[in-house]
Length: 173
Image 1 (tube, rainbow, N blue to C red):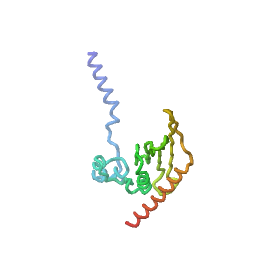
Image 2: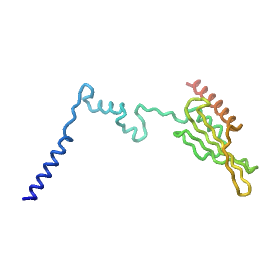
Image 3: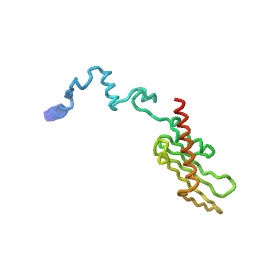
């Protein structure tokens, strides 16, 4: 008897506590489309959904990506640094980092880091850091070269090359 009463009480509490969750939400049909396809398209346009093409990598939504082949600054940087061994090349992060480079005749080597702060061909959208490593008798010292001649020449060269690439791409269009 006590077990039945306890069981009925638990069932009653369970059903009454969950009753609010099962109520259908009222929807204004003037604002929400009736057809399922129209509702799905509206949700995707508002960013509340996805398409199968997005899941498998074939974008079909409103998002557009500027790929590295269409970014003049990126292409110019890679063309100019093509003699260097590169350790990190991350287009989505806007970063190119070379490996340590030495011409082989000295105990000095340099490492170049290029950060892209924007897609426009402007000098303020490019940040170049150059580190210099000097090794003497198994003792290496690494320093950041601030406002050096190599960095300013490299920046100027990249900007000029990017401007030419952008001008040529506009001519083709």
